[in-house]
Image 1 (tube, helix red, strand yellow):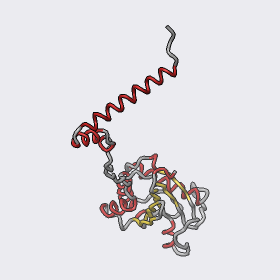
Image 2: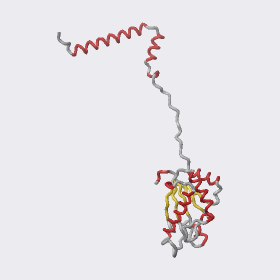
Image 3: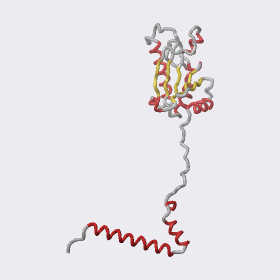
Image 4: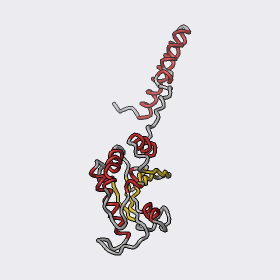
Length: 211
């Protein structure tokens, strides 16, 4: 016996499906309204798809370093030793009279030990990168181990970095920069003004990936 042609097989399948469809429709119409409603509900998309909106989850924002520093400085009673200057990208901690370098030197004085230890403790609690900037007054270097104010300013930054690292700040978060006499905060016409320019500033970056 020869095999049935392909078109005949397809036609038989179609006729069988049509017969089953009409049988289902006949049985459906014979049911009472309540049964038809239950049958329709079983095939409704709403029964299997959750259309409720998931609860919105607020993204946790990293703590603002300015607010953190202000709180920690107040807690550590360092307001008289530092000055905060905030920008969009960073918080600048300017060390005041308690942490000054004698003219031409890069050695932290004895009065700086307690404030530096307190600063190290509060910076160790933060994840931010800290750029330590060294500055000098305008008096030229005439003797000693340093060849220029640039070299002196970098040495001052290194002195502070060593103190911060010894106080618990991770060294990989510390960066040194030296600006010599070229970024003064005051003129250099009096000993008091030159003392203000002999300083170190800690620039706390708002994002850890900035460098």
